[in-house]
Amino acid sequence: MGKISYYTEEGLSRLKTELNDLKTKGRADIARQIAEARDKGDLSENAEYDAAKDAQGLLEMKIAKLEEIISNARLLDESSIDASQVSVLSTVKIKNRKNGAMVTYTLVSEEEADLKQGKISVGSPIGKGLLGKKVGDTTEIKVPAGVMEFEILEIGR
Image 1 (cartoon, rainbow, N blue to C red):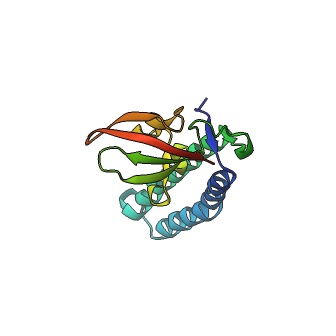
Image 2: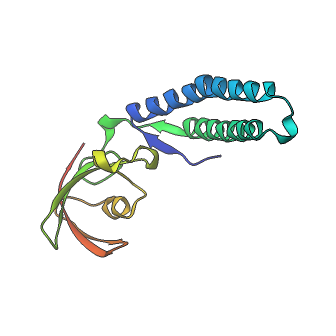
């Protein structure tokens, strides 16, 4: 039994699309590579055949992992999120107390995290440090560079 993860509709849909692509296009590509390598003759010293078989094994592992993630995925009901404190899918505006820099993050599941889009994982040090906090709270978060102090300015969704 894998761990339950929570997803937005968009994030879950992306996973299902990726799984479908791997099962159809991915498997077809590998089968073609194996067939081409097999046509080249002696399989005992055919590096292309070995590489294609290895790729097939990796593809099947990835498919199995995605299937497990999807089977343990739960859809987040964005309307039921309590905006009084930081939780999954909260959009949080925080201020770095040291340099005054303000940043806005949305807390998402690990698989949906994308720093370029301002989406950080609830499992990351900053994500963990923000969970459960309310507007006006100050939190100290241990990051690789040391300890950072943030003030929670806004919580939205």
